[in-house]
Image (cartoon, rainbow, N blue to C red; front, side, top):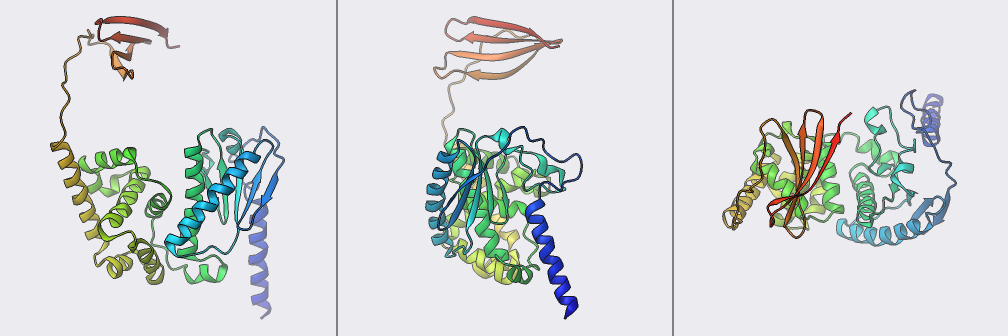
Length: 340
């Protein structure tokens, strides 16, 4: 009994130590230099606690409204309610966000700023002037917390019970979070089209982290379109109960993970090939722009009117930015710089 109490006290002390020192007790060379002093204030709501610094009260109010709407929507869809408060820590800019040591681990990859971080029930956000990006951070943070709670539980007891459920890859979970928090758009569709038609999707082990996450996002969307949106909560719940992704697919969808991936690739391959065959090719003409073999031409851009083209010409340590007028068929600007 004494040994058990000692172990529990040791675990509790370790969790308290981590809670207050995560980010400051980092090995030499991984700490971030803080150039600004942060004076934190907070708004306490029924389901959220939002921390912000001077000049960030508008971001905090916006976060509270956006998070409330999105949390209600996602909890209704997944039929799951979070019991604990969600804590949002908001930085006024990406630069200040990158100064934070909170949430850093011994993994050196965690020292790269630029993405929102999740630590327990805490979501770290930054505002870069783009509300669409800010909305994505908020929704993705909430989605990740709910997915974590459903699959692994919200307390120590549930986490121990779900500890054997360790076969969910990060890319697969992140794709699910993207599906729950992000609207599918032409940018995602174009990237998935290139991934599938290039044949890279069939060589899954050669995909990058971003490509495999996009693959997962597309696969969850495929399940939505083919099997029905209501299958998603059932599938997540069955994966938790069976502690296996494979069993979840078999019990809910009646197919194995391998069969689902094959059907997913074939479905979109046929869809994208039909799209290409039914598209009308533009009336292309060769541009009458003289080029030289020993020079390199890059970064071609066309203006909105479609009457001018800008590009960069490289030659032995020098580069020129040129603008070509398609109507006048001559150059209207040429800027020369030397690469030192």
